[in-house]
Length: 278
Length: 114
Image 1 (cartoon, rainbow over the protein chains, first blue to last red):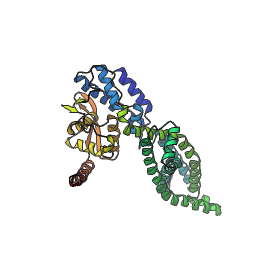
Image 2: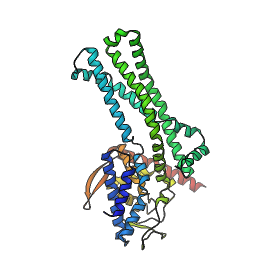
Image 3: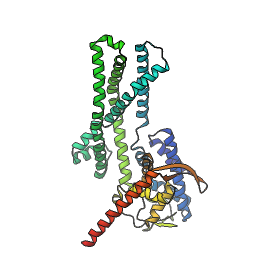
Image 4: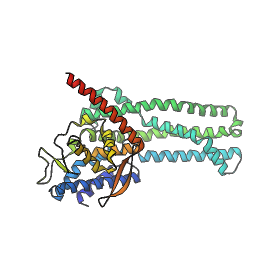
């Protein structure tokens, strides 16, 4: 494979924020696409070098392609953190059930923990993650007014044109709806935890005698930890995600600009008619 | 076969229709990304010369939504990711086609009436 394709794929690899399996697939597809496009151009009479430049230019900036491909998929680091948190909580609940029931760490205790606690926690945790992903800064962008948003985004050096900001606003609106859905779904779960823990505190004996008491307390501690830690993680990643959304929007709106001028002689680029071979 | 791409239209006109076009192009049979782009360009006589960088994200979205599925296959001596319609995708493209034809007729009537 050519040095140009290698360089393009290396840039794409750097810009991608996806799981390794998907990364491999994207890189392989991009490589095939570039080779097909270059072969087609070459068959039309272009030099190999020119054909490769044409293929790279037509596929667009690697950062833009990576941003588009990542849109709609949770960043791997966040997803991994979620899985670790869920495993940790399930383990803690397992231990608590085993302690409360006075049993060994048997598969039965694990099954009991998973059956009663994990589904509730999974729903609660998913809702929490979704609500935190919809951080208020997106909503603020929406409310601030178009001119202010554009100024703010330009000040960040992220957006060059008003149309890009409009796409960001669409994304903000979509995410803001998620906050309401998450709030509606989280409320009963949080209420359940509060009732269980308050009940346990009012009657300390039940904390050890009732299986829900200790597991409720463990879950609440995990909940408090998540409430403190996750917003910090999300806030740190917010800037990156916003930029990714902007890159994605640029790929939709600015593709014609991304097609760089020809770098080869004898190309059909620059003529009024561009042809391609199937 | 050559694709004449001198009649490209404003990409904003296509906004929201890219995925339908991709689904429609797969009705004729499985194809890989580059072939899909070429097919759309050829069938539309160069009007739908889509930006190549937008095709793969759209195909991945369609796959995530269960409208297409993909697999590696040997095509012309080269290993490629080939996409094909699912049953859900076929239903979707049929309903989109019906919807689009209705809009097309309505718009035609308005243009002719003015």
